[in-house]
Length: 266
Image (cartoon, rainbow, N blue to C red; front, side):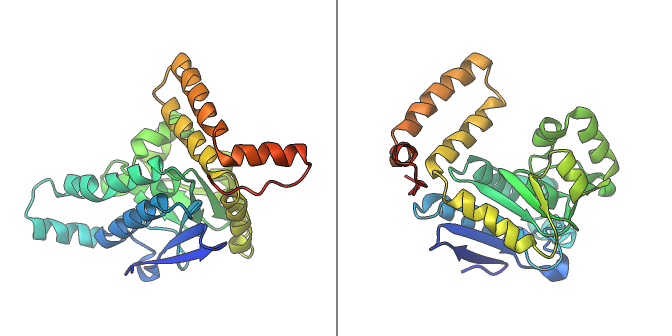
């Protein structure tokens, strides 16, 4: 089905993991990869049997960012002056929006270096876990570009303006440990146990009440623009929506019966 990403599924298809499979280029991004990731995210979000989505990379890297040779080839093919803007608008922005607005958790498994747009691909996910040898680098400035893939939107919010500017201006590498300390990743696992421990995290998320997680995600996204009053109103609406789900009834029943809930994601 896909040429440049591999898809694994776990827990009877409830968990879907896409692996960028271009290890020879450290999983660089090109039009095909971006289109396939977009299709994967949208297909998983539309499939009621899928409850958790994840992105990772094959080989030693998570993602090295845009394949520059292909970008230059695109300029020659398209014969368009503002070809970089066209690539961002046509290929990057739709993927960002699909991940951010998905109704299900989208999690990054950062198995190695995440550079440029590859770093932002991880950071726009709901959260990221990283292997101890992984690092993040906002390397855009190293080739005279600005952060895209929502970098200028999320980085100041995640890090504060000062640190975001420092990392964007210098392209400095942040180790997995430093990224954890700065709040960029949720957890760091050893290289040896990364696959096992990250899958345990995904298993837990997969079997959580999916609708409630999606509503929580929606509320977090809205909080960037809302006033306190607007956010409180939104919470009341979404809380009612969550209370009308089957999983809420199951959660209450399990609590009263002192047993583990068996959520269905509906």
